[in-house]
Length: 229
Ligand SMILES: *Cc1c(COP(=O)(O)O)cnc(C)c1O
Image (cartoon, rainbow, N blue to C red):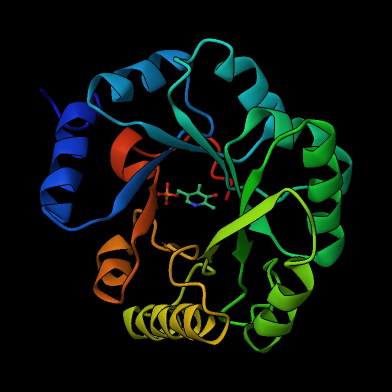
């Protein structure tokens, strides 16, 4: 097969699986901008967890998916779209404000669902990125624990483009430290289990620094037509 002509999804997924090996690392296939046909291809290769960024897109695509696929919302969630997000997804990875958490809690109660959420941390303090500041994470946790129908099981981060390998590594190191600190200080060893960091360009570094959940789009499907992140 000519590499420049077509993307070999099967081969790409196999390479990722080989890299992961025996380690307990969740591979999330990021399916934004990908068709249902492409998603079906990855399901054939054993992928069971997918990530989507856009609610409208997810809504139509999910109609055709098997019921056992775990769906993670990884885009920025606007407060007026919480109802749909709670309905469509198993996990919302991008909770970044108290108001948003509160809305999700209210909506989860209405839908009689326990909503699994992660907190999005702006670990590099990038003014362009959403997320909770590192130093605000602990107090944020304490506040959100009181909200009903939420199950907080992880932290996630998205780094800005253009960082050096060393900067990426240092940010992921900081994330792992924060993750461990929260587990210990809040006694959450059994509940806080997911550290979602690493994308196509930096998943190797992320895993070396302790990630156990990588979100991979390009490395599976090839370049997206519209580069959104
Ligand atoms: C698009 C996206 C990814 C996947 O990015 P790739 O570089 O294509 O692997 C991962 N995480 C988030 C939050 C994204 O928006």
